[in-house]
Image (cartoon, rainbow, N blue to C red; front, side):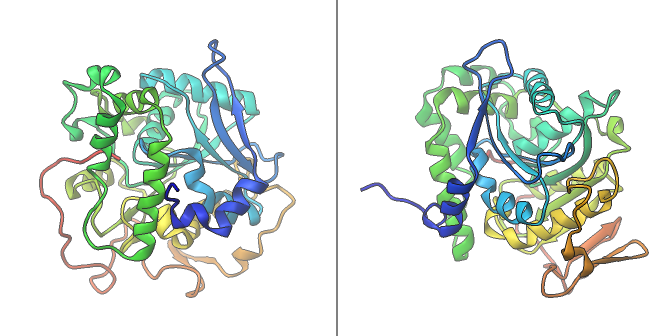
Length: 344
């Protein structure tokens, strides 16, 4: 009997799979290239939240966001791309997917590779903006941090077992709490479901020399969701992302590992709502125009600070340019000091 993770056996995941069908959408000339998406919430919304996974993930890793935010009236689309070998090819495919779904703009929640691709799409469509805002989680803006630039062009010939080993090497083996351990188990299952072509193409985009040009995205609101325990990216990588977006709002979690949207989903979902609430009442709202979200009766703005009910929102929600206090965050973070990272 094959092992199944706690998340995969949970009633929440079963509810997700039974209530929200997976859609396969072909937007390229090759009909075998299909996007896999889960679309929840009011279809009248033309600026939904789109969730993009890391190298090791599939669209269903965002089941906690799709269920929780969808129940609050937010349209959420979890998307998994087909085999694309270049960032340019991916951006063209994502634009075609938006056109196919009739989406004018999107808010993108991108994690690791998904966050990098979200930034590149925003950059490439800056002359005719298709991105309303970005929420970046444990992500990067320069692929050189992975030190695979020279060998990335050969990934297409690597066997699947070797590609999986490259990725799983970044999954922590140290002692973690149950929620983080369950998130790792679930992601390992998702990784095992990916084909050699899926893995090789994703790793190629993740590692071929490429970087984001943030000056082209100055007008796009950005929130950076980050954790302060052990995860795949080094501290200098995180700090470089902060420098690229000096006006970004910082959403810090004391712990959560590589996959906080699974292990700390309640906190991440609150951060997502705080980010998106600024678009209510505008053409870029992810809520249905006639809907009133009662959640925001608990949350209000006080100058530049974000305020919320203490039972719902982590105590270290931050505003633009704000740093966490020493009481809220560890005084030191035990990470490598080199400007490097491991794959996710």
